Image 1 (spheres, helix red, strand yellow):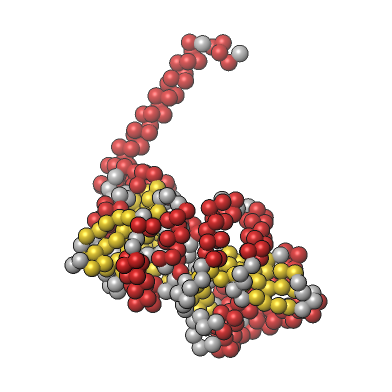
Image 2 (cartoon, rainbow, N blue to C red; image 1 turned 90 degrees about the horizontal axis):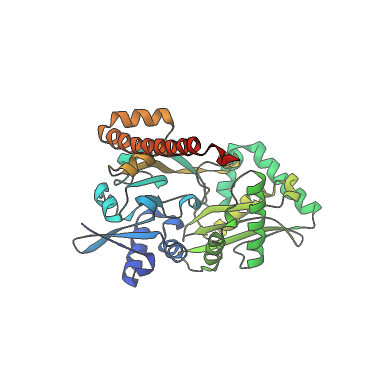
Length: 375
């Protein structure tokens, strides 16, 4: 195999076409975060984005998009923003992981939403988690019937609140695939407010993330697009969502609502309407992503699976990174069970200890010689 690493913008038309071909040939890769359009957008906005192009016998067999941060720390493309990552490859391909990391100039690569079971990364999976989906392959009516059967009380309550919102607030209107940039700004404002209320970091305080959503909102093709959906009561927006889609799958990304209407559960009302319109638009599923809110457990009608794990090459950086990302007791067991990691970690930690001791000694020496300095 031959592995070359490029910036996404350096991919030519042949490579872009091959990426789409590989993704389209494997249903497990049917996720817009694995699409070349997302990689190209990230490459325009962030200088640390790279793509490993993997060839075998003179033919491209895989693409590996990733982020390379300081000290060779590797992260999935989009990092905390995305709900799926992996190798876009011919089915069943297994790449030597150390060869791949070396070619990518990575010492370590953490993943938490990897397409489960990919042969290259499967040996390094430490956990596999379900990602709930709204399965629309048999149409919305069949999906709604399954949700009703799974949780009749919840379904009945949400439909009641939907009618109540319609009756009391001037009529309900749903807009699928809105092109209105003002509506997108409203959604981001709701989401920023939610982040602050819940003590989380406001992602939209970072201009490049706002720009990413703007670029994704402008994408309009049959195989990839940003989809903005909004619920209105009268003329007032009350809930919305912005996500990405392929030809068959819409992925949940940024849902939010106006807290003034919280008593109507507008977010859940929106999700059911979104599923109905998604089915009408020919989409086969809505991927809600792993974890998160309780509502996913009763809105789902199926699961995909994503994996968590970590791969690395022996190095001081990888050893320290491992210990920093793992609870202390687990890290101690892992490191002591692996002599090469233990030696590397011990060497680095001793170096840090010497540095700290030296700094403390210099500080003490300064205080002794010039006790009046603090005055």
